[in-house]
Image 1 (cartoon, rainbow, N blue to C red):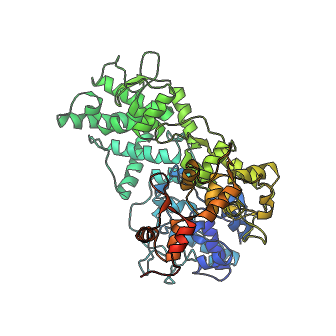
Image 2 (cartoon, rainbow, N blue to C red; image 1 turned 90 degrees about the horizontal axis):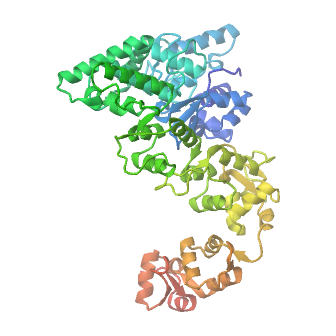
Image 3 (cartoon, rainbow, N blue to C red; image 1 turned 90 degrees about the vertical axis):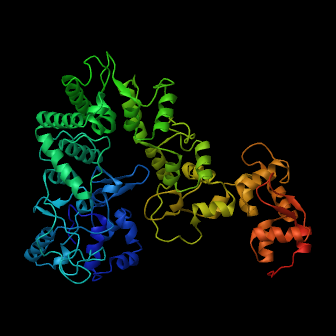
Length: 602
C-alpha cells in the first residue's frame, strides 16, 4: 500500500481495512490487529499502524496528533495547535481531493480505495477549506445528508454514496488565512509573515484578534465570534497584515473614534477597550508583542490618549515595563498563581495591584515562561508516569525524578518537573524490553506485581534502572509504569529483610494507608522502627490475627460497612479502634466472630 505524505495514522488504518476487504469496519479490523481504533483517532498507536502498513514510523507519527492534555495542545507535523481547534468528532473532507485520488488510482490501474486517503489538516478546525481547489471542506454526504464517520472506506459514505463527487458546497470559500495556515501545517510556507515566530495556536489567535480589531468597533469585552465569523476575522487579519503599518493605524483610528462617539472615558482602556486591556496590554515580551505594543503606544501618544513620558505598553526609562495583567497573560495562568510565582522568584514587590505597572526584567520573565512550557506540575507528572499521588510522591522523594527547581506556590507545593526528564526516566526502565501485546507466562504488570510481592514501586524502579531487575515486556502505546511487565519472582529478590512500608502493610491488611498510619501512631501495629520500612511483618500478621476491620465484618454479615457497624453496635461489640483517632473501625476478632453469624441478615 503506497504511503501518502499527508496521511495520519487513523487515515492509514482506514485504508488498511479497505485493503483487506473490511470496508466499513475499520474499528473491527483494528481490534483484530490488537489495536483500539478510538485510541488511534486520538493519536495513539501510530508506530503499530506504521508497522502494519510498512510505513516509516517516524514520518507517520509526525503526521498523527500528539495530544498534551495538561497543556491543552495537539502537536501535528511540528505545529502546536489548541486542543479545541483539533477535532475528530466528525469527519471533514475535500471531494475534489478524493476525486484526484481516484483519477491517480485509475492511471495506475488500482482500485480507488487504495489511494483515496484522509489528510491530517482536514481535522484542524481553523482551516475551513481546501486551498488547492478553492472550496470549503464538506461535512455531510450529498446523498443521505449525514456525516460519514470513520468506519470507512475514506471515499465512501456509510450509505454507499461516493464522497468524491464535487457538489456545490455551501459556506465561505477559503481565504488568505486558510492558505497561510494550511501551508504552516504542511511545512511549506511560500513567504514570510509577521505571525511566523508564533506557534500555530498563537498565530490563529493573533489573526482572529487582528481581524476583529480591523472592524473598527469599540467594546469593553472581546467579541466571541461563531466558527464562520472567526474564519472571516482570520482572513481580515491576514489582509491587515498585508498592509501592516496603514492597516493597524486605520483600525485603531476607527476604534478610537467609535469609543469617543459613545462618550468613552479617557485613558488607554477607555479609548481602546478590550484591544488594550484584554489583548495588546497583556502580550508577552516577544517580537510580535513588542511590535503591537509599540504601534499602540505610538497611536495613543499621537492622539493625546497618554503622554509621551508616561510609563505604559512596555516603555519605561531604561527598563522594560510590564503590569501584573500582562505578566499573568504571558505565563498562561490565573492571577493568584502568577502572583505567587513572581513573588517566589523575587520578580514582584509586595502590595502590587493587578493593573499597576512595575519594572521587571523582560528576559527573566521570558525565561520563566519557557521553563514553565517545558515542565509540568505534580498532577501532570502522575499522568506521565501512570501512577497515583502516593507512588509518584515516593518516586520523587527517592530522587529518581528531580524537581525542576520552580514552584508556583499555593496549589502546587510540590513544584514542577521536566517533562523530558520524566519521559527519559521511563525509557531507562525498559531498555531492551520487547513490545508485547499480551503478558508472557510468569510475568505480571509492574503495579500488580509490586502489590502482590510487597515491594514498593520506587524500589522496583530503582532495580530496573540498576539492572538488578529486568522488564520482560512493554505494552503497545504510550510508555508509562502501567505498561511495564516484570516477573514477580525476580521482583521478590528486591525485598529487604522483614520490614514493610505503611503502604505494604495496608495492602496486606486490605485497609486504607491512612488507617494503617493511624494504627501505627496508636501502637496497634507494634513498635515502629526508623526508616521507610518501619513495620515488622510479624507485628502486621499479629494485628491481622487479633483485629477485624469493619469491612470484613460487613462481608460476614452480607451487608454494607455502615449497616454492619450499626449491627455490631446493637449486638454490643466494642470498637477497638476507630474515629476520630483512626479513619476505619476495627473490632477484636475473637469478640466479633463470636457475635457475628456468617450469612445475610434480614
